[in-house]
Structures are given as structure tokens and as C-alpha cells.
Image 1 (cartoon, rainbow, N blue to C red):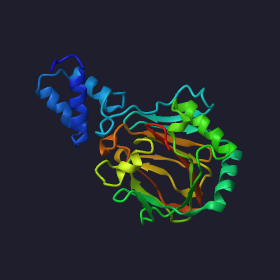
Image 2 (image 1 turned 135 degrees about the vertical axis):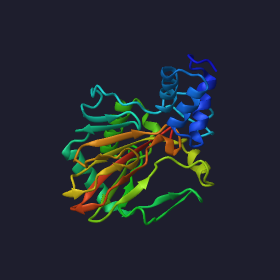
Image 3 (image 1 turned 60 degrees about the vertical axis):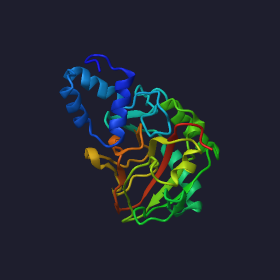
Image 4 (image 1 turned 90 degrees about the horizontal axis):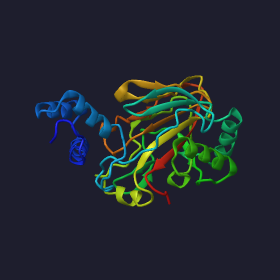
Length: 274
């Protein structure tokens, strides 16, 4: 390998090593030991591991293109509150108006049921002790409000509406939480294949806060010790360019200590979601 040029072979090697669990620090050490200069090695790792598009087989679980937020805030008139590069996290203010939050809650409330998680061993859904909320799904563009919100997200991230799942609304009462988890589908599980046929992997999540809990209820990212406060109308976006813990996209909903918490989540897929 050249010690100055970031070649397709090098990109592929970095992606493959990362996908099997080697940390960026370990890869950097290996490259330095092979004669790479530190600036060139760091550039190569940055280009691959920060989620820039790669031409790879989508069935391998290696990096894929991901939505990129418009940080100019012109797309939806939101405010950029905080950003992080690795993992890619963007906290946005005023994504939804207070009236939109209240309307979405009112539309979802009659349809709430105990939240389920996807069982990738079977491809079905089941109640799980790690998730103690109530929730429901809207079909994509099910009503004018959902359609308006989904168009706003598509414009902000440059990602087609049809590549997104319908909005999921969740309600957390006192003590309810969602323990840390990943949003991507584990390719090693037998139930993953039929899920991926509906639109490929999830590549990003947008969590919108529909109210402000009295205490607790933040969104936490344990790998980077980062917590997003649940403020009505705000949202947090995060992406993950491969179905692997190397993305550091582990996240959870902290317990609600006082009051209640309402959120709406939009998952973005690689391809058209059916």
C-alpha cells in the first residue's frame, strides 16, 4: 500500500477491519507500523469511518452512504444547537412548533399500545423488558401533519421521503425508559433478511421531542458520554454507516423521573421503504 494515497483497496481494508470489531486506534497503529505517515493514515481513517459514501456490496454490512444534515438551518428554519462528528450527532431546536407537537400527540394518543421491539431471531415483534413505553406507528404521509413533518425531514437531510419509515410516537410515564440499544438491524440474526428486503438498513434516526418532561427522560449516548435534553419542539439526529458498534450509535432513553415524555421517531433507510 502507498503511504500517501487513499486507494479503494485501502478503503476496503479499513471498512472490513472495522466491521469485524477493530477500533480506529488499532487500525491507526497497524497503518503506522506498515510505514504510513500519521497524517495520511488519519486522513484515510477519517474518510472511511466518518461515513463518506463507498462503493461496496450492500449485503456485507460495510459502510453505506448516510443522510447529511444541512447545517445552514435554511431547509426547515431550525436552530443548530450542538454537533458531534464521531458519532455523527446533530441537536436541532425548533424543528416542530408547539402546535404541531400537541397535534401529533392528540392524533397518536387513542392508538397507543405497549411498545414492542423487533425480534431479529424471528423477524417478528415482541414486548421486551428493556422498553417500557407505549407507542404507535403512523403510515408514511398518513395525514397532512405527518406529510408536512416528513417533507421537512427530507429537505433538511437530502433524503427521499420514500426512504423513510412512518413516524413512530412513544409515550413514557414516570419510571419508563428505553435501555441503550442500536437502531440498525444486526445482519448476523436470522430474522434480519426479510426486514432488509423492505428498504435495506436503517442509516439514521431523528428523534423529535413532543413535550418537555418535568425531570429525566434525556436521550443518552453512552459510548461518548453525551446526553440530549428532551425539550419540546427540538430534535436529535444521528447516523450510522454500518450495522456495527464501531459507529458508536448506542443510545437510550433515560427514565422519566417526574412528569411524562412524548417523542416522535423517524428512521431513514438505504432505499425505498415498503
